[in-house]
Amino acid sequence: MASVRFEAVSKVYGSDSKALSNFTLDVADGEFVVLVGPSGCGKSTTLRVLAGLEEATDGRVFIDGVDITDETPSKRDIAMVFQNYALYPHMTVFDNMAFSLKMRKLSRTEIKRSVTETAEILGILDYLQRKPRELSGGQRQRVAVGRAIVRDPKVFLFDEPLSNLDAKLRVQMRNELARLHSKLKSTMIYVTHDQAEAMTLGDRIVVLKDGYIQQVAPPLEVYNNPANRFVAGFIGSPAMNFFKAEVHGSELRAAGGSIQISSTAEGSYTLGVRPEDILVSEDGRFVCSVEVVETLGSEKVVIGTAESGESVTARCKPDTDVRPGGQIRFEIDSSRVHLFATDGVQQKL
Ligand SMILES: Nc1ncnc2c1ncn2[C@@H]1O[C@H](COP(=O)(O)OP(=O)(O)OP(=O)(O)O)[C@@H](O)[C@H]1O
Ligand SMILES: [Mg+2]
Image (cartoon, rainbow, N blue to C red; front, side, top):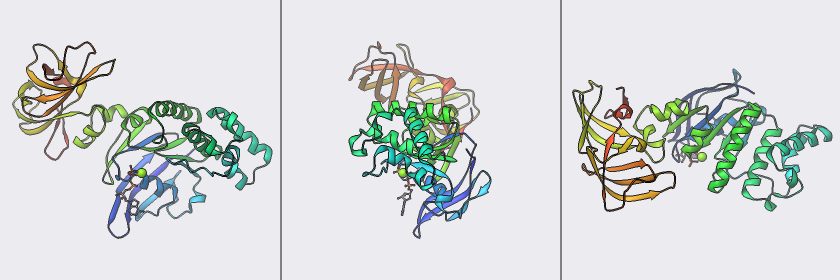
């Protein structure tokens, strides 16, 4: 258990490939922090710098207040779980999990107790004598997590550990990791590009883009109050709608209609509206030509075009009468809209 501090860390690969810029972040002891962002934004680089697998070009890294920037990986007491599991193929599950303990020269009894206890928590007791190739993807993933747990590290790092699993197993393993964290109360830093994983697992989410931090906040804060247009569009599924907007006095004109807002922010903006804040109603002042209707059972997702020619996505009740080629009318929940200035920064309303 430990706290982690990144202080103005930058990483440049080769002479010009800037992967991480001025990255400063404090992770509290026992906290679960999720790094999220599109491919290539610097997520793995962040973990690799902390683990000592890459050298920071600039800045310092601390564990429990101790500067470990120049420490070798083996001295950092960090366990990392990778996307591809990285199990030793010729060893049994037991030996894979026991490996680091043998290196530390623990007694056979201690090793057996530790591995068995962990295998029990993860539900893999019955597979201890199998080789990795005799396991399913989900079972292999559990072994990889188990191998990290037995080491009892100061910090756990996860690099997209669930991305090779099918959708159902992903959700199941996601819940197991959440349960594991509340049981172990260890410091965990978790990388994903799946915003649903970020929302459900993180005490806090760090949204990255092109090596720069965009926002650091608890999941609901990121969802309800995104710092900028990039975060707004990245977090949330289906994604937020964006419309060109003009504000005059308290009137906001967008998407071929207008709403009243409590703002004095005259000028041109981008209006952001979450799909659940597009309210389908017969006397709505906005019109949308419907192109696609996704019937999901619990709701319908309607995708179409507004009078302004811009795309609209709305979530509505499963019994809403709507079909492709038709039209719907809608209102916008003006208490929940977001306004982004031309530089992308959210304008307070
Ligand atoms: N060894 C390397 N040499 C040169 N450039 C690299 C190296 N590793 C990563 N990069 C570059 O650094 C940037 C960040 O890479 P990184 O692997 O951290 O991204 P990521 O957010 O983990 O992406 P993904 O979601 O695809 O795993 C990318 O532009 C990548 O091409
Ligand atoms: Mg990566």
